Image (cartoon, rainbow, N blue to C red; front, side, top):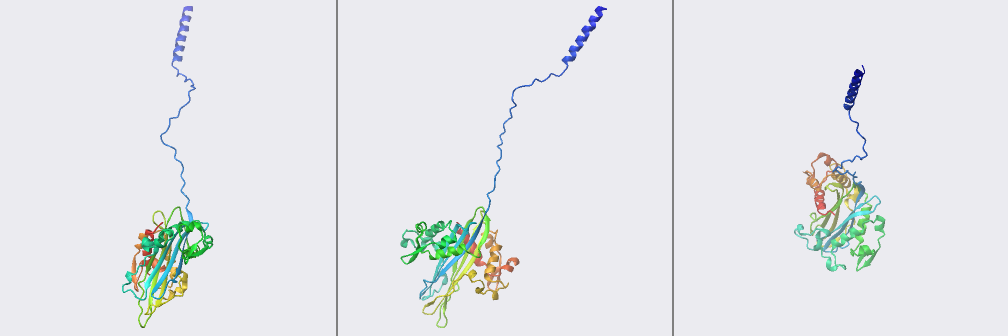
Length: 358
């Protein structure tokens, strides 16, 4: 009996050992830290688009026929376009002058021979270097003036003191005079007008360029006869445009001045009494009776300015026109309903302004 019990006990022990050996091993804890594998992709930093600022585009024109004399009909017309910030300070400016002369004593047989380029367009052909105390050409001095007025307001410009020097009214502001020793009368008047322009346009942009075009024609002039006075018709179109980085119009301003100087067969000139631009004339321009849509010039020009916002200069130049009573008017019915005038001068101005951007 004892021998049997011993055998049973041994069998139980063997079975218990086998059962224990079949259990899953218990994983021992480890003190080693878990290391995260590095990634090759850098974390993307959030980017913020620059906020567009709000600006105001203004234009001002100052005209004089003071240099007109018998035998010479002359108009000196200075234009300024400015971009102002929200505080009314100039952030960019462009200035030019149309100095147009017509010989009334020997009226030209071919009016196309009359030089109608603006002073800035003439560059070295204007020939100021020899008379300049700082040895600088007209356009170079104007470029310096444009830089010098940045940061100024209309009040600052109005406060600029001018003194007489060799028959010219020059500035006492040393910073301006260092780069521009020319007569400041027309510049100052045009800049102040531009800052206070009632037709000014607002636009928003994070960057922009400014273009100015000054285009003059004498094609409507006529010679005097024994029975009728002659006419020096010195007409100048002004185009000021703010373009975005893609060359699209952000805002634009258009104006025209028609300086008319009459003269007799001997070339004796009569000074004009009114030197206002078409926008300044407003209803005095008198387009209503001739307007196909019964709208005055300044309102039609303003409508055209609004219609071309978002276009490029090339697209403005490509606006289709049709002939109407000797004028090239918009073919598009919607545009024609707001602007039924000849628009070829406007189109040409956009093309020229793009060539003069700064």
